[in-house]
Image 1: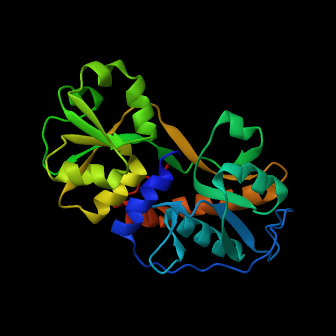
Image 2 (image 1 turned 90 degrees about the vertical axis):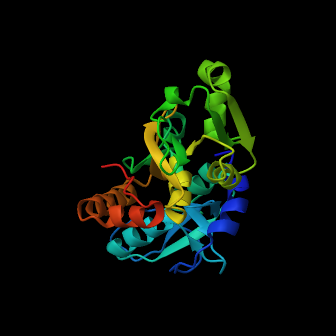
Length: 269
């Protein structure tokens, strides 16, 4: 995601919270995908992507995806190590065996399927609308006509709005910010009528400001899916992780982790 580095600068300052991480040892990832062994599972991630994976004020890696990966590894009887990688080189990191898994808000795309295999989708990546608590009359995209709307520069939401005739011609103003934190602050202060942005980011902010911000549960633009990625030849590990993810969905563990980070279960059933 083009906006995540800018976002991390603002989110870390505003939201940093201490959570415990339990990383395993170091070393090269094991490529045989043997779920029966005790080898450490090395998870590759961008550690500047709150709330999915980022460093807290104690410089420990935490986040929604980090907690999912820790729980999944525990159920597999495996240690887990979180390895910050150059996200632009993620496919090479996976193919080379330096990491076993990419687990960090990764969109499932047909192009990526050519070079890796994915879990089933576990969360939708939606752009939705956020408004001040108690706002009336904003219920979906079309109801933003005549309104002042904010978003983050270089974000998925901005890309969609820049191509939309509706946002060009019907919306009163589209204000672009260097990060979503500033946009939400202007929303709280009445300088915006709404903010359009990533649901995962907005709900994380909203969970910290429940008295000020609420979500309009209606997608703006296309919806993609997040998945966990594995090397093409690691079907065994993929299936083992998928099995415990399914268990976490069924027993409510995934929902609880989502509620902790987003104030609501937004995982895919």
